[in-house]
Length: 251
Ligand SMILES: O=C(CO)COP(=O)(O)O
Image (cartoon, rainbow, N blue to C red; front, side, top):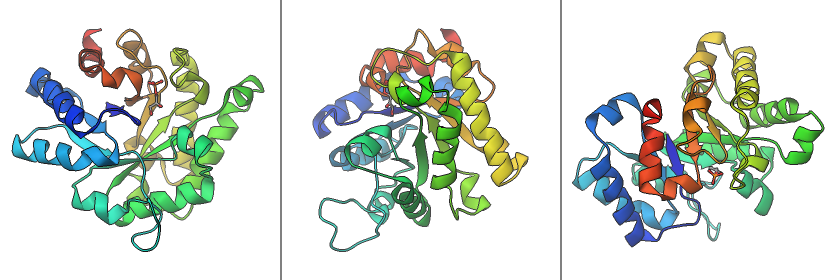
């Protein structure tokens, strides 16, 4: 269960938020579910210090990474920098980056490679816009994004990736994709991994659903056979709600 904070919470708010989360979560929760937060870049050092200092079992990561490892790329943050902060994860190709920052498949593929070069696990975000779903092309569209992002990625890396299916029309809108509709695409993603690599590899990859996940709908989503977790936006900013999502089995 990962919380994508997007551009919310400064580093002081981040500390308070992670402390509150750590206070609420128990060993039983961590034994059942891996919990991660993806704060803005400026919070990562503070979150690292807190997690290390208090030996918290919460994982953390970034929301983006540069395709380049160093150099004259003003405003970018590199894979080596994230690795130095012990980031476990980095979201790549989030629809907000595709939409507002013109990220295309070759760039997403280069970023996935950059993350793997430095042993930071990519959370590859894929998913269709409303027009694409209305035209019935959501599966083909999403699989083309998977193919593009995984180009030239060897199996020993691909087996560790996390893929988040996030239909764009369900993000921040309160419209959740029906659990069965989400399963249709997540199942197709797993089948494509089996085609590209092997069934064994496909079975190892964790596939998340994202888009208006809340405590009220998470159990239904998690009941689907090809959905292994959730990438949570808005609801991850509310600690009580995020804890309930982590405890989806009780909902
Ligand atoms: O984009 C998302 C997570 O990456 C989903 O956001 P919401 O949960 O706010 O719809």
